[in-house]
Length: 324
Image (cartoon, rainbow, N blue to C red; front, side, top):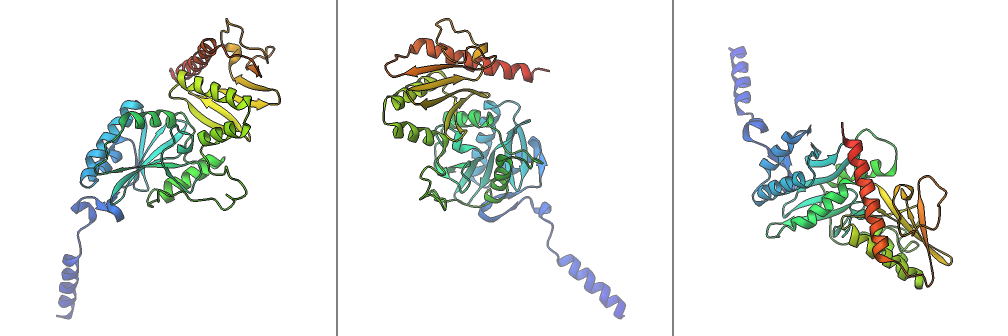
């Protein structure tokens, strides 16, 4: 009899257990973010979108369609209960996460995008964009950010070298599930380094303003022409203070020197220069440069043609590398 009572008790306990989560559908974590198992490809991302609550589901579908339309062949995964989007061989550039009142888009190299996404992160490279229920999604702006972000190095799993992989992995894993305030977080040494934490475009703005002479005006003019020719250009800040412009790779940098501003084309030796603008580095096999001195007038149509050729060289080279 005692044995039978124990069996009845065990059966009663077993029948009173709660059903597993998969029997009731996806679990919603804090803030309403779906709990989706880690996986690669489109299927786990679609499972995440289907589990997004309320208005966020339609917004998630729109975002996924926009990303695929902007970047055909985009790589997808779900990690840490967040969809990730990336480029094969370059890593993940974008993550999505649900919060109670908004959807957070995390651009892991957002500080290099133009315009810079508005919400700052503790990581100097990352920027966020929040979508609320009544927001009108600016698809053209998002598409430009997606194109720019896809051309930058992202977080690559299994890589332990380099600042980008370490910080991007930390951001993707630890900050994906944490709400962030729109207010900037000042670094500890902000008082000693006023430019610390600034985005690349903001650093270039500051460099131009700090020059305060004709070199700043010339650098601003060069920058304006680059953006007129290449609206999808990505601005970067490299080598301890050099403005760099990239499109499928770096193609130009400009630096002020004593008595001149030097505009360097990384693949200038491969470009046609019928107006003979190049006047420095003519003996090299790769780069060419233009030294502008005070009083020199820029032949804007000729320089824009040279910039277009530089962008075309980069995009053509990338297409050739991608061909089977």
